[in-house]
Length: 106
Image (tube, rainbow, N blue to C red):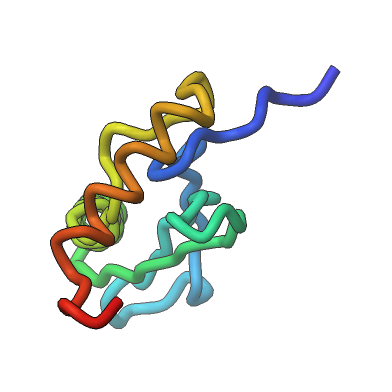
């Protein structure tokens, strides 16, 4: 059975993978996960990190991804709306927002 769908503004499990082969230069890793945006679409989000050793590179990649996910969630239009929100309640939130933005001629 598959995983349950993500709610708006949520992300799935964070995975990491190596970008470069073993060499004497710095380590390069990427951290990625799936994220459901406010538009309802699920996308793969990825950030990279670099460090002198494996642990530092993985930590940098995960920190960069975490920072990016927080920025994505900051722009959430209706934080009170989830999958369990009833349509009537979501409509009230939307109409209150329209009332604030409308002009007198609307």
